[in-house]
Amino acid sequence: MSALIAGERQLTDSPQGHVLTNVNVWSADGEWIVYDTRIRDDQFTGTTIERVRVASGDVEVLYEAKDQAKVGVVTAHPIEERVIFIHGPERPTAEWSYAMTRRRGVWVDAGRPGMPRNLDAMNYGTRFARGGLRGGSHVHVYSWDGQAVSFTYDDEILARLGEDPSHSHDINQRNVGVSVPTGPVLVSTDHARNHDGEWFSVLVTRTVPAPRPGSSEISRACEEGWIGTNGYLRTDGSRQPQALAFQGTVQARDGTLHAEVYVVDLPADFTAAGDAPLQGTATRRPAPPLGTKQRRATFTDDRKRPGLATTPRHWLRSSPDGSAIAFLMMDDEGIVQLWTVSPNGGPPRQVSDNPHGIASAFTWNPAGTAVAHVMDGSVCVTHIATGRTHRLTPRSAEPADGPRSLACVFSPDGARVAYTRSVAGPAGRFDQIFVVDATHSP
Image (cartoon, rainbow, N blue to C red; front, side, top):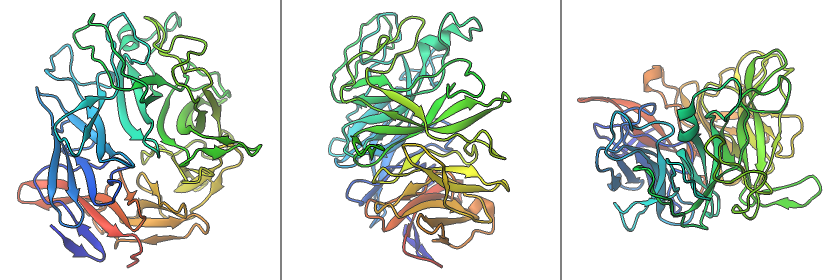
């Protein structure tokens, strides 16, 4: 379907859900948009990974899950015709069903649809392999050159142990990990759910069970994004070639929790162990590799409204040149605005100053001059230099008809933005995929 409404086109029109991930939904050539078929983005019910051709609306199924497994949260490779997504367990049982700690990354090449390959190896028994994980990976995103994949992670081994006030063992806390193509990783058969992986996977962040109030210790690391197409420049003029920005949960001096912007500089070699085993132990989570450096970039404890915005859910996104990390935070009046901070830290800069709050995840255009997002029932673009925001689509009078909050994604050439709307049809309301000309202003 190709309905034209003030510069926007509806690409899909079928009685099923169409869920876009928050970034990297366009193929490298900009001809396709990839999505999953969950009925709702907060329920893991999808069974297929698909793509729609932007020019014609033609749909191709790239992967269909088997053995009652579910799949979703798909992103595209920046160079090759490849997609990567979450895969839940096959043949789920009451004892082993889909959960945050029971999922993996899988990729499929568009030229070989239906042929899945495991990104990350999983060790659910007690014999842990270097480069393998012991839990669930989530929201897999390729680096700009396609030579690494970031993800968030929850640990099944530690989740089984439960909470532990005495801290005799680590507890399961969300962390950020990276996979690189130095595999394969082969694991033992001491657990029926173990499986090998094609890439070498490690955690790159550190969390603690109870951060000291006022410190930079964190209890959660999540919503990460790659910094720059070639890293970023340090203050001394040298280049950090690979790094991630992420949200880290700190405890303020008054005991309240909030998220801050964190940066983790990544090493050239992910296979060298640091101060603890890469694969973890029966009581400790996998440790970051040697040379990984985690630090805090924002300090908002003393603001009237400290911390990054929790609504809408959003992922940190860097400008292509790596000079600015964008995030959402309330202004003093409680309105969610767009802000940036250098990966080297320093005072955050408020970019937008709108009467309406930003209401979605966001992405940068390839030129690094603007960010696309939803606001006040419209798809909008905010210009970084001026902070000016303009609408790409007319305002939806009914919230149910407006653009959804999960994704607002620039095309590789910066000419279009992809997003979803809930559309009513004979079979009910389903999210459908739309695109709009990024130069259009109603």
